[in-house]
Structures are given as structure tokens and as C-alpha cells.
Image 1 (tube, rainbow, N blue to C red):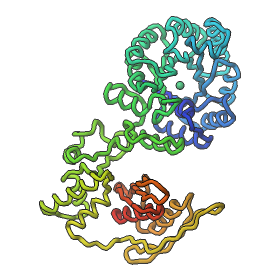
Image 2 (image 1 turned 60 degrees about the vertical axis):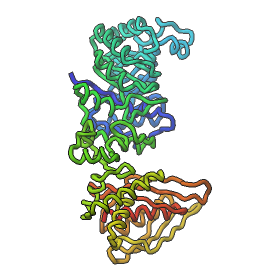
Image 3 (image 1 turned 90 degrees about the vertical axis):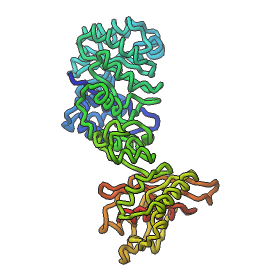
Image 4 (image 1 turned 180 degrees about the horizontal axis):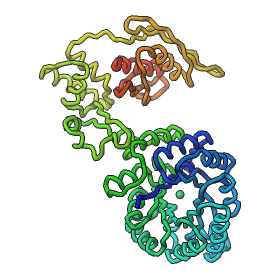
Length: 489
Ligand code: MN
């Protein structure tokens, strides 16, 4: 059987501190999730707000393949809101640990929880909803009570059950044994809902699947309350590659979905995050890159293309001969043994000062050592910026491109954005350039600090890094951009 995936990026993921998505943004993410191939999209909590209600309604009417689900408590008004929003299903949770029953159902007993659950499930079925019934905080509850609760839910015609590790205290061993017990007793599908408070969400989810869970809950980039939920990209790739368990996920869409969610939620993916982090398929060290250039499987467990990414080789202080040679080949340069040694020494020098070595740095070093004088294709001849309060930041630039003068002006969200937009406009007929990343560091203290801007530019399938270091942040950014352009044009 193919494992089912309920994606809760738009519900538990939106409960990430600081995250709030508009209806339009939720629609964009839902479409991406549908293309990714998730079986169920938990799109929000219909009763929670007008925005959530409208988002669920719009997503339900969009004709997606996935089942559209709303979160609900064991309350009739929650069910009404979900049904009125045209959701296909509800993920309905009942408190199932002593702590949760005490704090949320003051004065009520376990038997009360069972009775209210049954009534609400029956009501949801009357309103035509598929019911996935979950025990909230089940992992801190008594298994004996969870079983009685689930028995009653099954009798009330719930369609699926869910075991929730609401505060992330499950261990892989318990996840597997509990799921074994539950799946042998209950014949309807059971899902697992894990949180990452101890960094165990992925492995707990996998062990629950080993124990018999037929559906998993996950979010893109592992978003979610507190430390987040199980990350879809991690669970899916580990299950498929390491455990041979199939899902319906179109793995090639994993990276672009992650990027979309990162952009719209403004929660940055850490560079070292498995599968989707910037560094997950980036190689710097000399020994690694030289082996990789011969055989990509040497230092990669899966190829980046599997998840819709590209391999990135970056030069740094660990850069060895092979990676520098690869870059030189690109520019058609050849060096003698002595020159090569000098080039490598100079690269390590920059790295030892604690600075990141960019492609543009290496090119400058190579050209200096080989005494190659090259006319720069793109030169900045003038720049003026207007910015301040109550006006739109505007920049005008004068560039010399292949000897021709170009003057352009553009606006932006800030002065740096305006300057970069003006340059992009000026070069637009020469090359289609995409700015992939922009990173600023202040090297010294005060407002007169030297700022170090490192950017990543992309043209076609070539990616280069370059730097600008100045006390003027706009000039440092522009310098980095022009340096990068000269690598790409
Ligand atoms: Mn949760």
C-alpha cells in the first residue's frame, strides 16, 4: 500500500511563531502542494478566522486533486464552519492526556470526552465530512484510554484515526510499538502526527510507519508550532531512499515547494537543513570536490536532481587543485605547476583571514597570477540614489557594457533594491540574470563599519558568487553585483 501524506503546512505550519498567510498566499501554497502530490491538504481551521474560512473555501473550490481538510475541535460550531467552507474532511482532535483533559475540559471526565467525541463525529458525518479523528497529546496519555476513545470513534463511523505526539515526546521505539498495537486492533487507516521538540520528529514518524501507520502528517521545511512538525522532505526522502517505502510525492517538486513556502512564510530554511538547505548539495572541501568531479556519488547520498536541485561547487579555503582547475577550464586558462601553487596559496590566504572565498575572488587571483589583463565587460560609470521618508527609493545608473553606454533608472523597496533593479534593466538585453541570494555582514562595529556583501547570481544553469566590501552598503552591493555580472557575461 502506498503511504498517504497529510500536509499541514497551512495549519500547524501557519501556527509557527510569527507566520501569518493571506488567502492568496495559502492558495499559492495549496496549488504547489497539490502538484507535489500530497494526498490531503490541511488548509487551516475554518472556525478560527474569516481569513482561514475563506482560504479553505477557495482552496476547496480550486479543483485540486488532494482532499481538502479543516482542523476542528470536538465542537459542533467547528464542524459547521468546516462544512460551510466546503472542506472534504476534518482533522478533529479530542484531548486524550490527563493534562489536556484537565486544562481544556475543566470538570469533565474521560467518559465525557468520549461521549462528546462520539456526538461530534456523528454530527460531522451527517454534514457529509470525512472524519480523521485524533487523540491530542496521545503520547502523554494512557494507551488504555486512547484505545477506548478510538473504539468509540470507530463505532461512530470515523474514517481514519490519528495518534498525536503534540509536544514531541515520543521515541522511535514507542512510536513503533504503540502503532503496532493500534494498527492490529483498528482496521481503519491510522496516521501519526509528530513534533520536533527533541529533533526526533522524522525518525518517530518513520518508526510509526514501520509499526503500521498508513498515513503521516508533515509540513514543508518542518514548519509548525515551537520546534515544528516532521519535515515532509526529510520523511519522504528517508522513507523512499532508505526504507524502500513509496509515497505519491513528485520528488522533483520538493525544492521549489520548499522555496515557495520559505518565501511566503518568511521563515528562512537553515543552510544545513537536510534535502532543502542551501548547503545540502554544496561542496567546498578540496578532496571532496575532486572526487565528486570524477564521480558524483562519492560524497552525495542522492543526486540533487532527484529533488529538483542543482549541485553547487563553491571555492573556499579548502579549495583544492581540481576545483580551481574546473573554474579555470571554464574561462579557458592554463597555469604552470608553480602558478597553480601560487593560486592555491593565495586562495587559502583569504580563507585563513576568516573570509569566504567567492568565485570572483578566485578569478581575480587567477588573472593576477597568470598576469592576464582583461577589459571588464560591464563597468559602472555613474550611480545616483534618492531615498528617504515618504518617497519611493529611485536609482539611476550609467553603465558601459561592451563599450556601449547605457543609462537606466528604476525604483525599489529600498535604495539597494532600486540600484540593483536599475542595473538589471540596463543589462536586460545582454543577459537574463537572476539574483539568488544576498548576504550582508558588518565587519567592524559602528555606523562607519566596513560592510561585506556576498551575492549569488544565476544565468541559465551557471551560478557564481561575488563580493563587494565598502563602508557604503549601496556601493558594496552594486560592486558585488557588477563583479558577478562580469563573471557571467
Ligand atoms: Mn500539531
